[in-house]
Image (cartoon, rainbow, N blue to C red):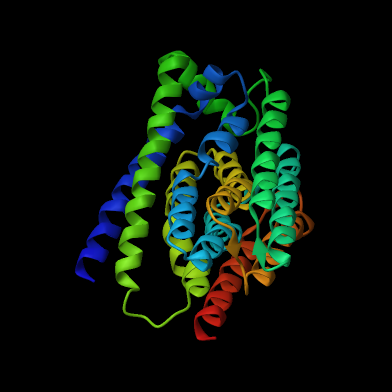
Length: 309
């Protein structure tokens, strides 16, 4: 138990440091890739290697409830707790470009829900989910090639362009992502040790505690982005992560070993519907503090219900 809390403390430092490095270099990374800052955040920060690794290991160890629960639970955590807390700190942009990627996140969540619906996610379904993610990356690359920096990211982009070469910025941004991934991995190890003595099902642990641990870097990224006034990066990171988990993380885990996903369908449907609900609730292209409070309260109620059953 003490070791678990120690790992969580170390991981928190790594996650915050990685988020800071990524946020500082997002604009230079975008120039290096030839895409917008939003696109770079969606693609780089949205990639969740620690989620995929965790799901693959759980699947390989015959713990399908952990694998599927973590992928779906992480999405619910990000769409409620991460966005909710960020919106409480500062209203988030939710119009124009953001809306398109929110729709893609909802579509990816819908594909995951369809895969979960039968109770077993087979290898062929896992392959289709991975293919869907790759198609989404190709579409993003085509859509975000070389347009001007937009929105709140413009100011940071101008400052960064005068101070850091694009290649160096890209390397540092990737280093920030790697540091976040390492921190997320430690967070998982710490969380597993903390919850070892609790009598919970694999799916309950995956949906709640493990999902909270593996999304820790998104909290750090959102905080860093909010402090620097580039809130689009926070939203892009969440949208990209949701799409990644619903397709790549779940798909690769099913390719390793078919997943029994009983009891995950309702959360999977909720994760697919939430981006659409947020689009409907936003007014004036912003996710306001009231909606943020509702999301945080909703997350607390959901976790309580899952752990109590």
